[in-house]
Amino acid sequence: MLEGKIIADIPGLIAGASAGKGLGIKFLKHIEKVKLLLHCIAADSENIENDYHTINKELASFSPDLASKPQAILLTKTDLLNPEQTASQKKLLEQFNHPIHEVSIYMPESIKLLKKYILEREF
Image 1 (cartoon, rainbow, N blue to C red):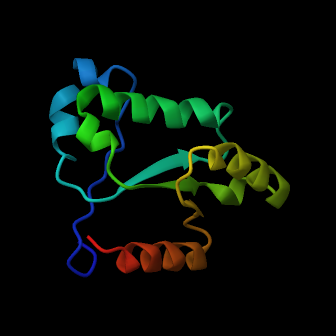
Image 2 (image 1 turned 90 degrees about the vertical axis):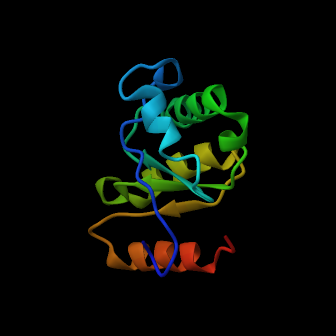
């Protein structure tokens, strides 16, 4: 919980979850009540667009209502890339029209900015 806002982690969402693969439907039901979806996508991914699509396909297959909730993208592990590489990955994600936050546990300011973003949301 972050100042009265409930935060749910969905680390195991994989292709096929909406059909019962992995933790499947039980896992997806866990997040139905959230008001904001934060997609954690690793900056060092070799196919960052596919990572985003995999998550959203599973959300939409399970529940169109869930897929239509407000979303933001957390570009994680940005400490592993140089600024040009991070900018390139971020540019690929801009097509999805969601706010993008570059975050790393090794960059405390990025976590502070993310917390501020969450607290400023009305939900």
